[in-house]
Length: 89
View 1 (tube, rainbow, N blue to C red):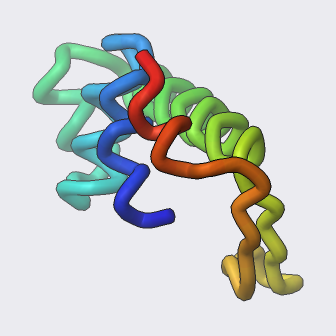
View 2 (tube, helix red, strand yellow):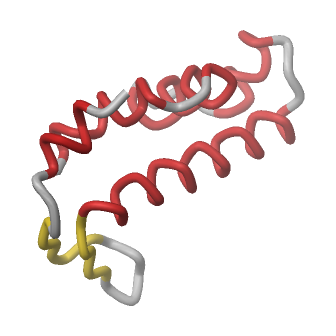
């Protein structure tokens, strides 16, 4: 499943893709992303939240994901061949 995150992030609209990549993959704090992209921190937060929601939709389209009470993934079962979802454009 982790192998699909980069292709799924690449499929996000550019508006969200860059913000999610900087925040979730590179670990930039949101205030730094805001400065870098000439955005407000509120705007960055919105883009990160919407991008995460889009990624969640992509993942749940192909996998049943079990999460703990704290929201951590504890198990998953791919209902389709996840590679085909990763490769979709």
